[in-house]
Amino acid sequence: MNIQQLREQFPQLSRTVYGKPLVYLDNAATSLRPQPVIDKWTEISSERTANLHRAVHHIAAEATEEYENTRLKVAGFINAPDPSEIVFTSGATHSLNLLAFSLGEAFVRQGDEIIVSEAEHHSNLVPWQMLCARKGAVLKRLTVDDSGRLQEELLPSLITPRTRIVAVAHISNVLGLVNPIEEIAAVCRKNGVLLVVDGAQGIVHQQVDVQALGCDFYAFSGHKMYASPGTGVLWGRKELLEQMPPMFGGGEMIETVSWESSTYAPLPRKFEAGTQNISGTPTLSPAIDLMRQMPPQEDVKEYVYRTLTEEPGVRLFGTTFDLSLKAPVFSFAVEGAHHEDLALILDKMGIALRSGQMCAEPLMDRLGVTGLLRASFAPYNTLSEAEFFVTSLRKAISMLK
Amino acid sequence: MTLQEKKEQIIEEFSMFDEWLDKYEYLIELGKALAPYPEEKKTDDRLIKGCQSRVWLDAQMSGGTLVFSADSDAVITRGIISLLVGVYSGRTPQEILSDDFSFLETIGLKENLSPTRANGLLSMIETIRKKASENV
Ligand SMILES: Cc1ncc(COP(=O)(O)O)c(C=O)c1O
Image 1 (tube, each protein chain N blue to C red):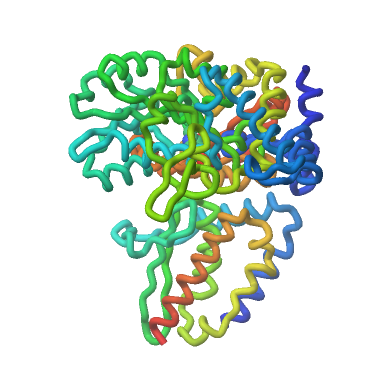
Image 2: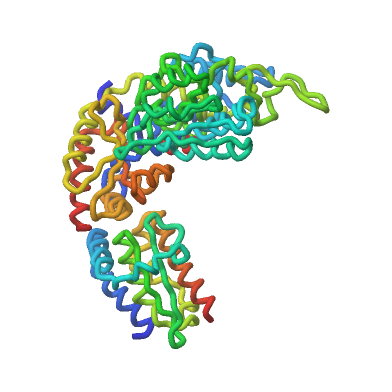
């Protein structure tokens, strides 16, 4: 599939804003939806709506089959050893909160320690803060250097016999850097510490193999990987998921219920209380099919990286010598120009990008900025869009100077 | 100049621009020209919530009127502040409270600014009104 064929799959790419063609560079916030995903949602809504697992009628069986086939597909996509390890959620935030609760109940006691990286999205920080407050546990910080690189070499010295969990992003939503999960996993395994990976960005830009990564849990959202919003996944190692109590009760998560107490359904239903996202979750299937065919976009990434690192007055964070370890997510500051002013002007030129703290306030504090501008690219973004972005950025900077 | 006259003057100025670019350039100019705001007044209690940039607003009663001074670290926001301060500073609290702030829509600011920016603008207006009602 070439890029033109890919673009044709995304209806929103043909719309205009302020009479100009939309240049959508806010993909790290949410990706656009391709036609097969829209079609899947419509098809289920118009032909296959029924509640899952619960009824004997024909449509319920079809709907259940569709949903469970999606589970198989996701398991294959991330190379999970067993499809029952795939828990469907409403998104990465849901997955991480579920983990912080259930893992916390199972394994965390007063005085235990949780290590979280300083570069995390709030969704992979706040749930751990809440767990620490609930259990009287201690939150410890794995730092980044001045450019934003995770100082994973400091991890062994942070781990003590009380450390239970390390939580880190596969790829930071601000820096775009790929963290060395295999190495971090090796350190964790050696010390008997559980490793939680926030894969919200990782799943989009890496070929994820959870067994090769060696982590214990991997969480992500559907809406950043072209599927429907309100969908998400938590993968976890079976023997751990089995030891964890559910966070929500009700629906099909039970085995038996008496007045006094309940026993829980086997995995993964134990963690899927209530009516599932019956129209949304199956859209992960066509999204995965499309992702497998997407053309690489090395030229766009190299062009933007090179231009922003060389541009006078622009300070790019998340630099690296090895571009294979960088996703096309570029956060930067411009000397003498506020990120909000730049974003407002670029918006008027038809360019959608993100400005502000990007749900990572501790990282902003560490980098010494009040906010940044972020351009994040998807495989459907062309080199000419990237060039237009650079020219427009230069124009906006000169307006503000 | 009365409040009404000041608003009409601004509406007249903005009516000359039909391009967003010109409007922004004018706001940027206004922002750059805004009177300096004392560093010691950049305190948390003067910070306005709901803006992506930081905005400080100081209000003092003087001879029966409210005197505003304000600042922001973003220049387009400073331009908008400059408009607001120009119109509402030196007015009595009653005058401010009886105004509907609709001149901002007339000059196309609300429609022209992004939703987060519009929220910031609304927060600024709310703060000015709050200061007025505290001082009636
Ligand atoms: C790295 C990272 N983690 C977590 C999240 C939260 O994802 P969601 O809002 O889909 O739950 C995001 C999305 O912004 C993210 O980029």
